[in-house]
Amino acid sequence: MDPRAIYHKSTKGLEEIAERKYKLLPRLRSVLILVDGKRTFEDLAKLSAAMGDPFELLSQLLTDGFIETEALPESHVTTMPAAMAATPATAAPAPVVAAPEPPRSLQDARRYAVRHLTDLMGPNAEMLCIKIESAKGLTDFITAVVRAQDVLRNLRGAPAAEKFAQEMAARTPLE
Image (cartoon, rainbow, N blue to C red; front, side, top):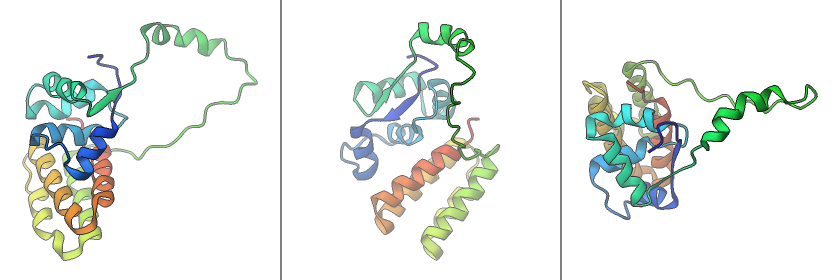
């Protein structure tokens, strides 16, 4: 696996998240939730290390068609600076899309998850919020977020649950 490759969910992966159609094992599902189309293998490996061998988990998801990658060819990476230097001054710069700033700590991610779940579910979120707030580490936090996503799916539907999962994946700290 290319450590610089960016991974995203395939159609099959999106179906699994929305419907649990393929009945993935919990740790594979947890890793699948972390795949957001922005993180590299290195990033995903850091996040999923507590769930098992990251290479094995991501390889399994890739082999089974739940995730896909679009790695840059090696020649493209090495020639990029020269290509950028040769760009005419009149060329329009590429638009910059500002991504939300990920939290710098697990505490920030907990705070965001609790606030977001309370907004979505009101008092029904209380027990889920307690689990998230009491998470001692990244693995406990991810487990609590996956549980919250499942409950959210039952209360608000698959689109709301998937949106929550994507937002949490973007805000989960890498360490």
